Image 1 (cartoon, rainbow, N blue to C red):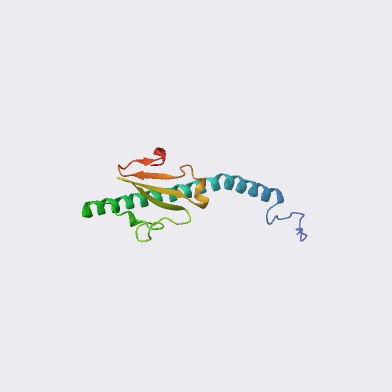
Image 2 (image 1 turned 90 degrees about the horizontal axis):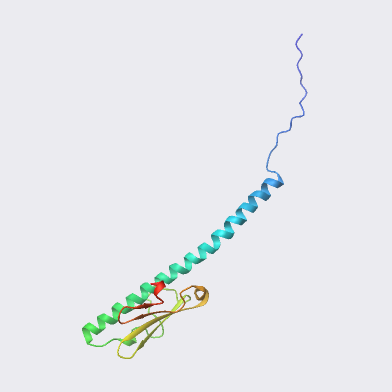
Length: 136
């Protein structure tokens, strides 16, 4: 005679995750985000700095064009700040200033969050020399 066991054995099927597994996943995510976030913010600052440098070079080109056509630098190019037709930098990141005696100096001053950038205030003169040198 064949015996059939219709009773369920005491075998439990585990569904879901244990608390320890969840804690390990949370710890891994925390460690990765603590490394990634500062790197991301540094990258964002560097990208805005690169845009400010590009805008300074655009201003320099416009000044040189005005000197070629009129024989003098058009120092009213910037006005209060960089015009939107010329600069693409966010005004909440950098302000631009143009100073002149016989030549000119374009200054980009960081504003707000951008003040934590390593480069700080950047300048570009008529000779094409930018400072601080490590930022160019």
